[in-house]
Amino acid sequence: MQRRDKIAPSILSADFARLGDEVARVERAGADLIHFDVMDGHFVPNISIGVPVLESLRKVTRLPLDAHLMIENPENYVEVFVKAGANSVSVHAEVCKDIPAMAKRLHDLGARASIAVNPETDVERVLAFAEHLDMILIMSVHPGFGGQGFIPQALDKLRAVRGELDRRGLALDIEIDGGVKLGNIADVKAAGANVFVSGSGIFGMPDYGAIIRQMRERIGQAGTAVHRE
Image (cartoon, rainbow, N blue to C red; front, side, top):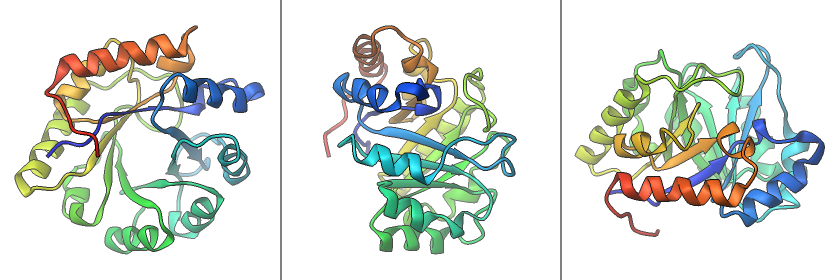
């Protein structure tokens, strides 16, 4: 029960002086959604961007906005991000006190519900509540900074999550975030991911269209064909 493959450029690696143009370029290049990293300086040791930027981007792109909240007390902020234009919201298992309640709240707000897990977090923390979710986000770097190298052990976590979801007949998306580039995207596809977040792997390239096409080719070579939803 596989889901459609989706490429999600992470604007954390974009040129913020030309952010609207950068988003327009990846949209024309064939991206499926825009990944929007939010950091609070508490849950992760960095501060990034927030609601006003997401609200501005909502006005200039038709692509779904995928908000990844690397923040403490996410229950205090999910509503404002959805109202600003987020189509999907990921909160971290490490700070989410009640995953089913969080998923219901996001669904009631009209957004897709996702739970993220850090490299050191056991996936059982989220798999126990998978039937409430639309997506599980596997971190393949330690969250907080862009440009980090991919942690190979994330592949084992992907296999475990995809295997358990398949066993239970749950067709959730599995998103991978951190160090995903052309050189390893086939491996993460083969391990079970179908939503591929890439920051410098796309925004660091001279031709966004060419790199996204090449990524799709590698994904297609890695696994069986998937159906369009």
